[in-house]
Length: 201
Image (cartoon, rainbow, N blue to C red; front, side, top):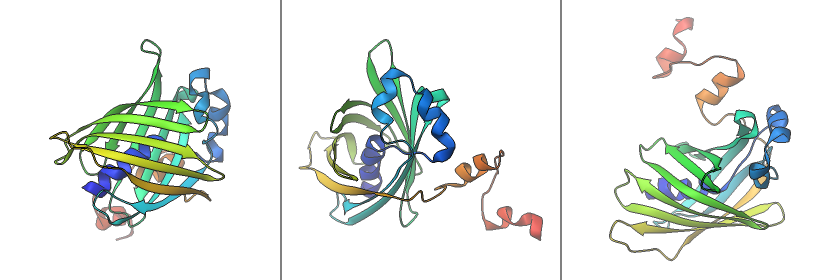
């Protein structure tokens, strides 16, 4: 679960999309412009999670809703965990807000603040047994993004911060079945391998 929350913080800070989303990228309205530089790219991050164990994460991103929002999809390289973040601009509050949903059942809501050299984010965690908040900072490098995240427990104890370094990679393709479904213009209801290949029985 600690690995999962580390990935949650990362997903909130990284974005990407493939060539199919070039039109949406061009149409992004002004408040979403800070994310345009990341659209059309993929990232592979390596580092250490909150429990001191190695973490490898793959992320993909795209503009959605005609450029009014930005979507991040990520998955740990071993396939054990993933999630999706949607970032949008709250015109009333004048802030970038995000919602993050995970395969582990917990979710987060937070605020992300873009800058010229990266992002900062603060998110509240719902449904996690150990953590109540995550505070993160991303810094752009030459083809890299360095993420440092601090986790706050339900008792208010804040970690010193765990870091991952993301490097730009080629588009890894769909990370979940629903992305593949979208490419073919339909969705599937797959519960196990038998369901997926039942038409071949």
